[in-house]
Length: 459
Image (tube, rainbow, N blue to C red):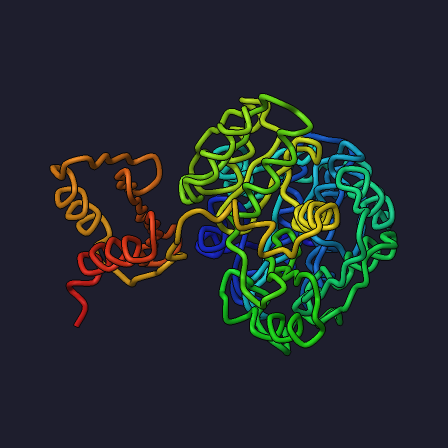
């Protein structure tokens, strides 16, 4: 088999901060996947790896090409086939193998990508091996003809994955009616295996058919418009809760019994409360866009809150440094020490269901104490000169009484009664604003003032 010929510009376009992501076939194809498999095998330096893929039409072929590339360096490959990203992380942790997952998560149908990790689900980002893999793909990895090719075999970890999750968050108590919207993504594969084991849950499936063309709506529950069908179904069924998963099912969002979307910060606080009850005094990680209610509650429960930048590699690294039991992000990613510090939308869902089943109140009341302050949600603005706008925001607020600034990630402006963060996108000419206030009027005032500065040069 001839060596793959790779255009360096193509490689630079798809290697991002945390993963590989691009459109198929112009940016990502099987040749690039095979070359990346070789480079991953060299960097991971393990005798065996595990590979999984989502339901996108291009995923099985690219996963097989990646496995072929790794095997050419003498590495054995276990292909687990269709999997959610957290199922791949489970395989990596359970088997102690480096892993690669072919998915573009919530991106539209024309995209695909590769998420890679070291053994035990340790993340690989630009600063922890991804840049090295990228450079090896560009340079090419020589195959030693004296090395026997590795063995490529197929296996299934779905049942073991489901059993493991339910040991971490068993659900028992009152009977619950749960509507789950898989968005034609990988939760349609994993949810039946998990919920078939829970006698007290009646599962009402929505869009469980695996279809990488996403015929019903984008599998991106961070966009509240994609929750419309789930909200309506929860109300129509009189369900206790709705679950919305993204395309690769590593994120989960909730809808309460009133058909209202639940802010991910409230889920972070709820799970933190549960984990601190099991491990008093433990550390809990939250990123800087999470509601200030989260660190308040962690302190009230005797825990230690630690703030970090947005992004899974930062969260996971900080969890390892602090031995944190749990971490939560505003984007619906939830990380668990007992799950190799990896993120799992399904495990977060099980924690929420367990808490609800143990209570005698509806979800909206259960979460009321965790939702203390109105939040704007993420508001994106197209900005040509992001640095100039951030500088103007900095100068505008720097001298105001009672205001503090920090630049851990973008610019965070804080006051006793409100806070907002503005961050630049890594991949688009966007500034992302998140604002929070002591009440709705305060939040709206701060949000609109910041937006006026951000958008003042718009025609």
